[in-house]
Image (cartoon, rainbow, N blue to C red):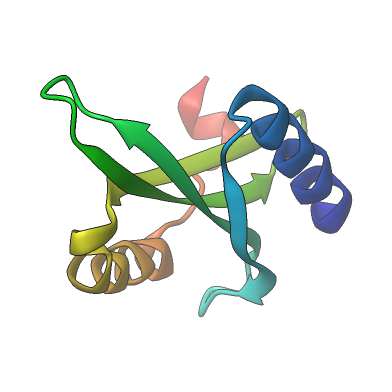
Length: 103
């Protein structure tokens, strides 16, 4: 299920980035009836200039017939209020191409 895949990916993310914290997890149904799992993380990093900042990552999980597709937004915490609505709007326009068209 989408929820199981989100939980698995969330645990893998937290193992890969020990200082990260989960801000939000939820499942939503897009306008085209596609079920998407969403997870938002806060990840503290130090820039090349030595400045400590938080990077916010929002990941959208879509189950495919074989595997899972993850679409990720990464931005500085200071930009999230501007960028996140754009990401959410992009997701609403997202649709998978029929397999027969791709092959």
